[in-house]
Length: 302
Image (cartoon, rainbow, N blue to C red; front, top):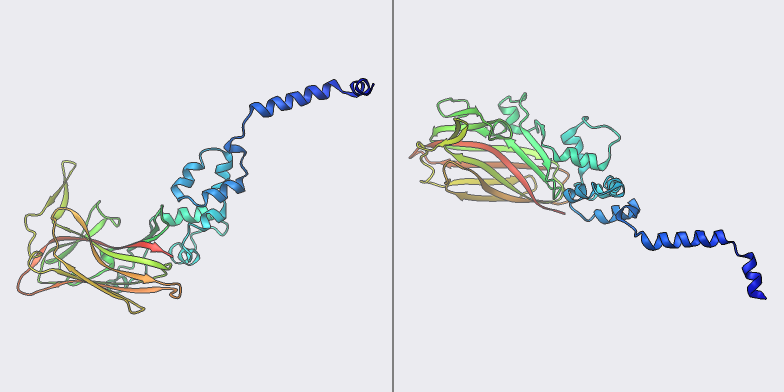
């Protein structure tokens, strides 16, 4: 009797709807697109920026998560607000996402940098410093043009000339014909984030040119660099010092010569660096070399 009463009150349509939903849930599996954006953002925050941008192409959830501010906040240097003020100045909208800030800082941003040589040689119209973030690590990288360095004899065309080239970020390099007293100095100040940094000088023995669309480098007159090593020195405003020396070699190719390393801690809001490269020996001349630029690279950041 109870069974018969139950059967009277059963709605056949309800059973058909339940069956439909049951069949749907058993046949359709959840996809990555069903994940909440907040969950996706928490996961991709552990990835490198290029990987985040690749995953943003998967679907709408990943695309939305890739714009989360907290994801890119962890990729930016700890003092990125100060970097923006120094590098970009007012050339940035007030309302801008952290991802857009990261993108802007990853470009080679050019500015005068306030280097000492900039004032000494009146290169105020030349933008001689470029700063950018490494796209993978987010480390601060910096490059100073040869026009931003104090080069002994640069005003005497018998010794030095600034020549145009496609092999420099600044479209020009300093070319040395020959000289007795080789000395290059530089000094600049910059708000580096806490971390370890290395300084390099980019040099080439010989003079590069293009002939019939192909790169050539004349090294016939390279001389004097194998007699005595070049000495590199680095000083920082907080008392750090590094020095090294080496013979310049490998004519016809651009080489990075390691000057030294320095460390920035959180207590230093800004660091002043002084650099020197010398080969002083009046018993012989040296020449036929090309000075590209001074480069800084972040080895690690805290």
